[in-house]
Amino acid sequence: MTKAQLETEVSKYMSYVLRHAPDAAGLTLDGEGWVAFEELEKALTSKYDVSRAEIIAIIENNPKKRFTLADNRIRANQGHSVEVDLALTAVEPPADLFHGTSAIAWHSIEREGLKKMQRHHVHLSADVETAKIVALRRKGGHVILRVDAARMFSEGHSFFVSDIGVWLTESVPVQYLSPDAGTP
Image 1: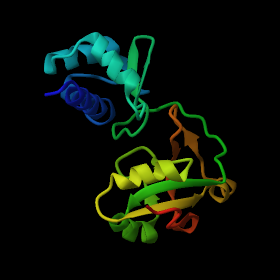
Image 2 (image 1 turned 90 degrees about the vertical axis):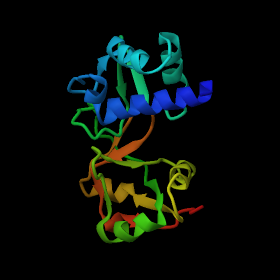
Image 3 (image 1 turned 180 degrees about the vertical axis):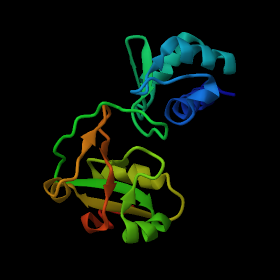
């Protein structure tokens, strides 16, 4: 396995245990999703041939900025399926937000809106380009959805922004969605 492959595998495993299955690595997250860095380090070094310095480099160099390391604790920034309180504060969103999805998923979204599914929130992008990157990871055709965030907010929906700039909301009902906002 190359160094790049190892880094990718370790990063994916960290995402998995910090977002979805901490028990798979013998970890217990606190109420806000934090765990002692030493505990995660122990779990990673027992599974992979990786040093503390390499783990820190993986965290710091992650292009998606999936993790926050502070005060010898670490957590995933968003995307949890386990119960955590990320202590986010509601803020007014920009007028439009965007969501990249597959053409197949659009068929149900146009009937039911965007739902958080097993996550805590629906994830939205502040710009079309970021939504395109997300959409292109999906299989099949791609759709970029424009979300009328200003109207949602004015009608009582709450929005949050994660530490890495991902916009979060509980759901996006159909009436606030329009397709093909720069579909790739």
